[in-house]
Image (tube, rainbow, N blue to C red; front, top):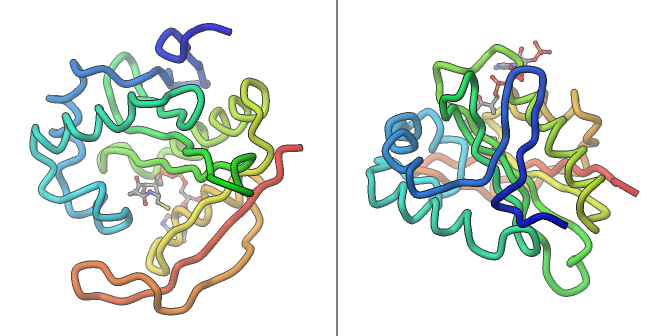
Length: 179
Ligand SMILES: CC(C)(COP(=O)(O)OP(=O)(O)OC[C@H]1O[C@@H](n2cnc3c(N)ncnc32)[C@H](O)[C@@H]1OP(=O)(O)O)[C@@H](O)C(=O)NCCC(=O)NCCS
């Protein structure tokens, strides 16, 4: 089994590879927008300055290939976003929670659908993970669409459990069995 840092996954248009500190400057330039943070937890902050970028990369390069699988997404050699999965704990350690995001100028071109497809295939073929789940906010139908296009099933809605920047919404949950 190769080191996670040596793994490259190719999709029709993109390349997925592990993160490195050299990504920090480009990362802070594409991630530094409320539009992305609005749909993510406070761990993906706004503003997303160079310190936030370094923290993000540190987190996404720790315990990779075992407890987490985090990919930088490149389009024509340029960093455009990220996707990955984090292993559950205890009786859920055979499962993982996925996430994905793109710089705003890359939205609406089917890229998230394409990279999520590659992530699902990677998790199925190259890991022991048996089930994937994703959560998102009530005001993010585009992300729900990305999930359903990749065969995820809506498992439920937790009413009113998300509060971001003083606005409250629901948390939806999608799942997909891999085996
Ligand atoms: C969510 C996100 C990853 C989508 O990326 P993307 O590359 O634009 O997604 P795609 O183009 O592959 O697919 C988006 C789908 O949502 C649809 N869509 C977009 N806005 C929508 C809306 N307001 N209501 C319903 N559907 C919508 C699109 O039409 C498309 O579906 P289609 O192919 O059937 O036409 C991107 O907007 C993003 O990075 N958002 C911020 C971070 C985030 O939300 N991450 C996910 C957290 S759960």
